[in-house]
Length: 183
Image 1 (cartoon, rainbow, N blue to C red):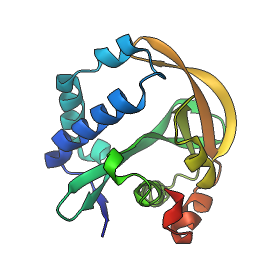
Image 2 (image 1 turned 180 degrees about the vertical axis):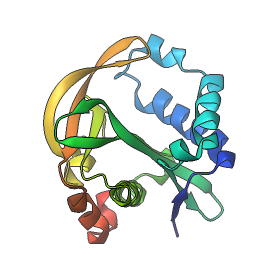
Image 3 (image 1 turned 90 degrees about the vertical axis):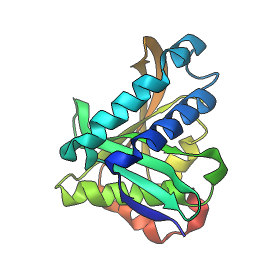
């Protein structure tokens, strides 16, 4: 059974490890190798410790936890930066350990985040997905509307991304009952 819960400061190390694993493995051939090499363990640890120590920032991070496996995935969201007309928040990160892919955990994390954002009065969400990312079809099954392809700067590299939008978070929340086959 998977539990989705608010991230806690004690989760910083495992979230950082999942983030780095997904970044280093999942983005090979998508993000230039020299940019991937710039992301360090220390940087990841500091990033997550800082985010999770601040209750306001931590409120935008949820984790997926399994018995005997601990935290196996997480999602992070917040206000759009920069602003995008018609959208008030962005899903910044959604990562799951590879051994736990295709078990519905991505869907559960996205729905939990949509619930959390809606409770804060946010109504719509964006997501940037690197071109070549295997998750594009997942975002479309989750109701994401392809908006456009645009450049995205990450660690000094410009990488093309597909921009997906959910103009109404309630459509994402409705996927809660569609079943495990979504992610």
